[in-house]
Image (cartoon, rainbow, N blue to C red; front, side, top):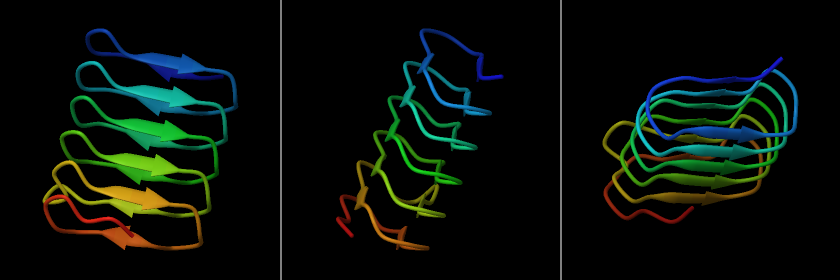
Length: 88
């Protein structure tokens, strides 16, 4: 089961994904979590985004931290974007 709480969030497909905050999306994957604003996760598993404007594109256990404003993680395993506008 997926969960989309908050305002204007969406979860499209996948399993056990959670979107909180405002205007965030998860497109497929499993056990992904977005809880900031204007965030996105596109597939993958166990990825998290906690910032504003953060994006994770696939992979496993990747993270955009709270300080990673507008940061991006592109695939991989256990990668982390911690600074503003980081791309990992």
